[in-house]
Image 1 (cartoon, rainbow, N blue to C red):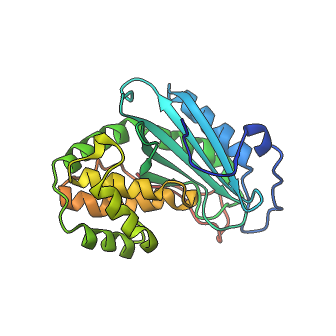
Image 2: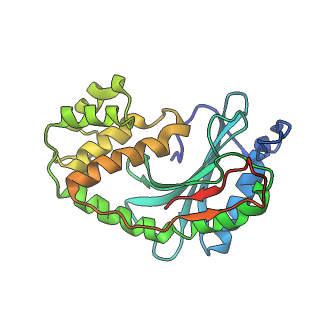
Image 3: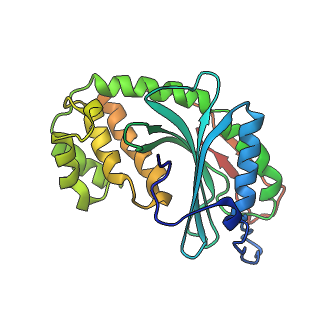
Amino acid sequence: MALIIAKNKVEFPQLQKIGVPDATDSFTPIPHDQLVSLTRDAINRAGLSIVEEEHALARDGLRYFGGFALTGADIAGSDRNIVLGLRNAHDKSFAASIAVGNRMMVCENLCFSSDVKLARRHTTNIMNDLPRVLSSAVARVVAHWNDMGNRIEAYKNTEAENIGDLLVQLVDSKAFPARDIYNAVQEFRNPRHEEFKGGSLWTLYNSVTENLKGGDLSKLADRTMRMQAVFDKLARHTPTLVEAEIVTPETDDDMEPIVVVG
């Protein structure tokens, strides 16, 4: 069973061989393997266990995406499990971040519900702050697990109407590629998994995530969260609010703060 759908999966020892660009005054890249190790430490400190772990590289190792399926008290389920998504870039294409989400067991679809930016820029003192920021992100796992359970029930109890208009709205909000609209409509009409049949918002949700699967992993967290912002309003689901934390670097004037978003 796959945790992340990618063509260029690698093992951890391969991450350790990836070179790191030289730091500049405004950019201090984080080694992919070091970010993975720090994330593992944060998971262990939270009393959680990793049951599955996968890694993928893109652009000759400049971009990284990883997934960690977790288990622990109060986050075990037969139909889904909780996942931490981790991404990092050495080419300044996006900030390093960790996302909390779920994987549906029947179809391996990933859907994220929170995103923690580890840095707006990879600043000089980022390594000093990372352990605390990662621990703060992992501590939100149980809250996001419960919130996703409530979201799923709300979606199941909401009939999907005007799905063409809804899909266009997702395209406009940059949650879904326009080229895949027809495929999502077909998936909605004839779900390949019995669990998603019925014509509810939950059916449409999984029609969309099915068609996001295998796409650009670096955009997946953003896309699924944008979709939830649209669907939550229709289902009248109010997400669990988690306070944001600002970690101020030790400092140069040109450095931006590390931002934790729940």
